Amino acid sequence: MTPPAVSQPFARTILDNIARVLVGKEAVSGLALAGVLAGGHVLLEDAPGTGKTMLARALALSLGLGFTRVQFTPDLLPGDVTGVSVFRPASGTFEFVPGPIFTGVLLADEINRATPKTQSALLEAMGEGQVTESGVTRPLEQPFVVVATQNPIENEGTYRLPEAQLDRFLLRLSVGYPTLEQEVQMLSRLQGAHPIHALGAVATPAGLLAAREAVQTIHVSEDLRRYLASLVARTRAHGAVALGGGPRASLALQGVAQALAWMEDRAYVTPDDVQRAAPGVLAHRLSLKIEARLQGLSAEEIVREVLRAEPVPVEGSVEGPAQTGPDRGAPAAGPLAGTR
Image 1: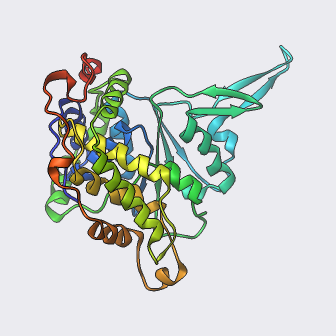
Image 2 (image 1 turned 30 degrees about the horizontal axis):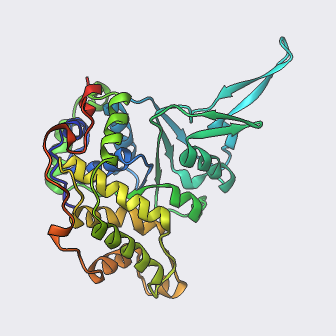
Image 3 (image 1 turned 120 degrees about the vertical axis):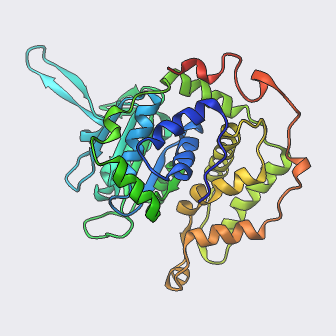
């Protein structure tokens, strides 16, 4: 996974701050940040000890967002996440006690260890930014981001995430193991106190909201929209796929591509942005036929095959009009108005 050439000051500042904690993880950090900038949620799927939790904490701290970690277990109840109404005998009324979901970044650690009923408690929050309890709907603070983790190897005591839950995650990413040199550097850096304890905010929630608005203004040409929609359609038509990407996948692919373009300080999306976003956006949305699984095919391989098969638009047809200054996909005040 090649790190993006990030040149946008807001994004570069955040990624540099995360790099103080995570060694050699610029590529996955960049994609995770792109997912947040696109207004989505991120699923980190990898073996234990690869830095999934550390990435979530570093991202939340860098953005100046509140951070809450919930360890998902089989006995976790929906109310343990969303909150419950408690009867107060003194007043004779019920009082709502907010759950840990009322935060900026919720880390759903080992999300697949909770029952489907508890997993589904996140659906409304992730899709609509609100929680309904006892017939009362309560909005969550914004920005609100769910970063979930799961171990793809261990299956004992776990519950497979349903397609509806997976589809709520904008991206599924793998942190991966460091190279030998990166691991040596990590050992040196973490010999003393862990740098996460000294990590401070380099942005504010207001700055993130401004950046999200800027990302939405990034130009996507008609040819490029047709290209990314065709990629998603190919996943549905693929012979090895029982369930392919839907319209939400197309929207997600466009949003992450816009975020990647903005992070490189461009006013328009290119096919490279779409191709870089496609594996993380599409693979977890594909349900393979049993024959394909028996043959050892993976969803990532299907996405790579789809990318090779779909003709790429000519570069000149995807660029927007040349612009400079604050009109290049950023509001006049700029998202850095919210940084510290």
